[in-house]
Length: 325
Image (cartoon, rainbow, N blue to C red; front, side):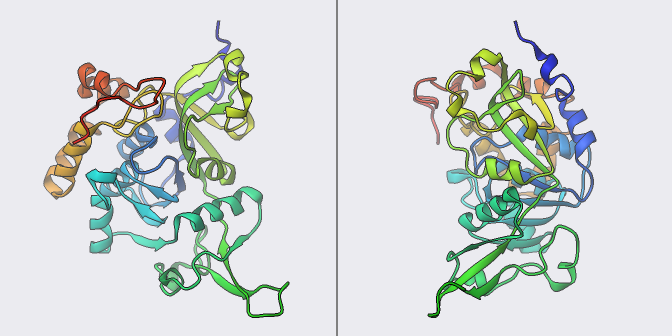
């Protein structure tokens, strides 16, 4: 029998988690990658609650990033890459927002963004690297100087200094730490003691969670302590890092969640079509985000037949034979 009393104060609904921890202007890190393990359920709830002026930070992302930008929730973005694989090599609403000048934007490499989160996790003001030397990443700043004095915005994109341990010319790049207000992570399992287990690639999720003031975890299952203690090397975050836990099966749809379900080609193709057109995208939000009262209602719209098509083979971790065109 599950003893959820250990995490009773952290268990909450999507609505409660957003209301309690996310405000207009929050700096938010989102976990996952392109069309893998995006925290979609809570992204939709942020949109429904009308949160605005978000300062979004992530190493690379996809569907959740694009929907949040398209819905007008994002004011500022620091990222390496945004894309939905074959369905959008560059996220469509993200690209439109940049081209139209609708959001402030600063770009780093994947590695650089991960190092910035690592610096925040370690509690140091910056992290140094050789990455970026000789590239245009160091030649172009995205943020104008007038916003450099705002909270949570670094006063410069980077700094270059001489390696103090080498008398010869040996430059290193210093990258400012990131310490988000909130990190949003979707995981396969949370133990009844609050321990988080992410199966498969973790991307920069661990560094993002450890660098943030608040961590909200949505999950597929809440499992007994006895399960989470098996293979403890597979556990990702200890309970004291987590502030809110929301059980949301299929909470990453239409992106995939390794060993549970694959990404949904049907829905991603639909999104690709509507995201190109402002009117169709508004209709998409009205139907799939504003028009559903709960995540269960959202999954009912997706349909049982379609959910079965993307159900993962537990051995391989993905849906064998899925038509991905």
